[in-house]
Length: 296
Image (cartoon, rainbow, N blue to C red; front, side, top):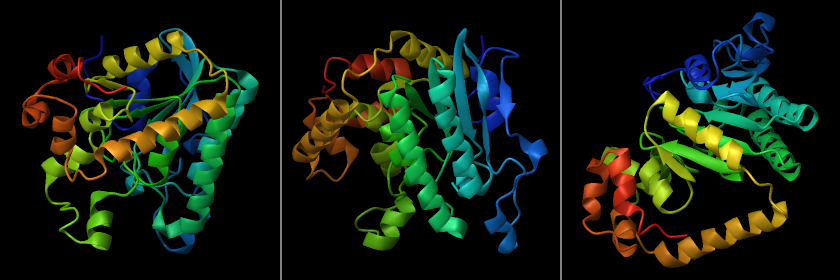
């Protein structure tokens, strides 16, 4: 059993730690040397896999397709080639019919170096995720990395069937530094790391229903949770209705917590006693403490 940290691993180590030993077969790997043409034009160093690893393998015996973003390369930013590999993987699911597609997200969003191409890629990825879901193929987002899932990839995560997060993971649309730059430090102090995790971290996202499941920062915990989700998966009777329900849940959260400025206020409003203690609890203790109070 692997007790390795998911957070500390890179893209290939995460795939190796999650999938069954020797089962991974990479598509369009670094030997193809397909480097972003946009970065080269700007004299920016590229990567032979353009910061994403895609392929197939088995997860606890279940055939899956998997994509892992390499956060160490340009913050896991999405560009034209990076996005095309991810979109292509999701489209392949329609013909190969795996039990699931796993997205191991580690991205700050779209690369500024190729913003237009990256934004188009995000829209194509979103469409491919929803197309897979419409065909009854679950798409799971795993978020427990250093960069988390921000910007366009934050939107992609919330388009997925389920989001599995660790406490160390972060999920949001705009990053703390972006919010501070646009709205000022009074709105959001990006240097307040405790505040950042209370607003974007895995525990908070779980408490407000945006993370389907919270797991400990271990490879096996992520692998076991993902495999169980795949085994228990029941296709949506109406995918559009499922999206409508998600939108209604979002509106309900805005109505309930729209005036709150800190996760602590939201947790207290949920009826959690001593909410300031929650960040100090390990994952099993945290789940025990909030199980009876988590909102639907």
